[in-house]
Length: 462
Image 1: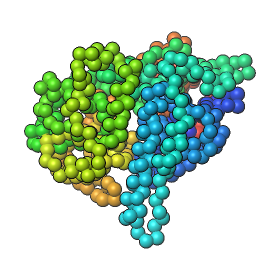
Image 2: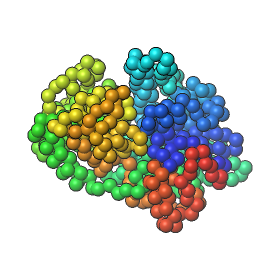
Image 3: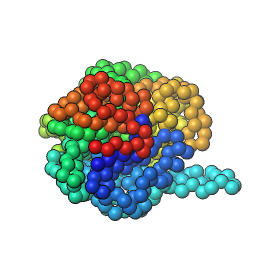
Image 4: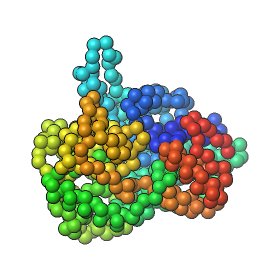
């Protein structure tokens, strides 16, 4: 049996992990690499394995760094089934279609401005490719074992990261031997609003764990809410705009929920909230259809509150014209827009319009991968390149890692220590080199044998 990391190896994006059992090949996630345009384009246009050799895909959740290369996989020859929870099977196709649309839009924008002799820009995949990939999804229940291929059975456990996210609990059998393989996917945090907490797993011979915050510890959400209240009140007082780059699935709904709660408690002024993402509206509608993913507090809130998530306070922006009008409208206001790492989508146009004024602010609420525009803004760079232009950064920038939906260093260690039988091998992925190596060292110090943070393409046998 073999496990090979073909993505997210000492890197945060591009999750692709290949499990080989008895000659069968099962891919765990198939995500896009996100980061500097040239490098990500190069890596996303091809796959590091033959697509036709993959028998099945197990998808942990819908975020594009885990799902976004599925259309490339299918158009390159994959003919198997993509297994995911029912909520993920509903969410992922709309994210893939949106990613394809944005690629087509960006290609048209760049081609209209290319100089004579420059090569035509082509999307990595089209909306039609995304539709074909969506037809290969099959939804499964949490907690119900399902045979993936002969010799491989998988059970999807709640990961608490976004709607439909799952920990994969895999039983692999080959030549009379059996091994339990657990892949955390993106592991969530206990006690966060809306979604259920991550489940514990009983046993693992091999643990494949994310490490996004492998060297860091989150501050308490209570402290963050107080800081958020001061931040919003300060920007509103100077009649500024707050631009919130946020993933359309998960972060957008959580931020709207927290702002609604602060306004309801009169801890911040009641400023207009605009969600400028047609995808976020569709994702929110899917969220409403999956109460099985909500925690007990959210279900209780639903029973006593007609608007528990604060949707009545929000204006969802659909047309490009209405989106552009927001940049001409005076503040105060909050604009939540994708993408979460500022690598595409409408948020780029809002940043172009807002960054140059000290009245405005940018609120960073999720992890920003190395090399992304979001990371450069979060790091305090004073000038940035956006869609071919250079813009000064005079707006206030505030990071709220406390609202991250990823487990931190202590949460990742607690999950691993919660496994009753210590894994014989632990593979640390989905984190920067610093975070991956830091978590690997922490696990080794806590008695976990055979811990590695693999390089891209590196395998372990078990």
